[in-house]
Length: 229
Image (cartoon, rainbow, N blue to C red; front, side):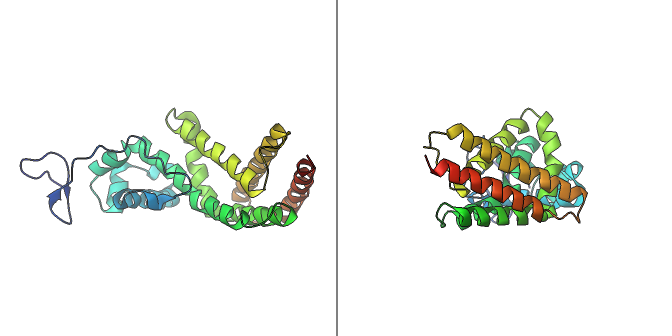
């Protein structure tokens, strides 16, 4: 992609016209509750290409040239939309389980607080755990995020959102006098789901149903206890 005469910046391949002057996104985060569809089409193409490469070759496959080739777009546009590789990977992390998490919310929030809501939520969480592909890509990125000063706060923010989602899906009321207990329960559920997903990746034949049944009984008891106050 070349610059048009007398202009600066990339030219749109399809229209052969320069892009309108526009400040590149400084924080390519996907708005919570909106998903990848909230991003410009070209940015979506880069993220989908990056996901395919991550599935095929792990984190080392996320090279800018390879991502651009896979997306069929100019490499310079990665910097335009994401600020560089770190920004793209940070946005990629946001997409890995975002849509599945939102589907969990939609299924649960139509149900009243109680045993049925807990059962539906944990049943859906179990299906996520058993879907190795979703967690494999996430765990490919996670070790790098722990050490990367730019990725680490993004992943920490994502986990904060997951804890809020747990509270919402389980029907936990933060106005309760025992807010710390509810927050702790949300953390335990999240840690259990992550841990079981990791075990399923290591041992694909692992039966996690008994663990989820036990978790359901624990959560039911806690939700009933806090509902009394």
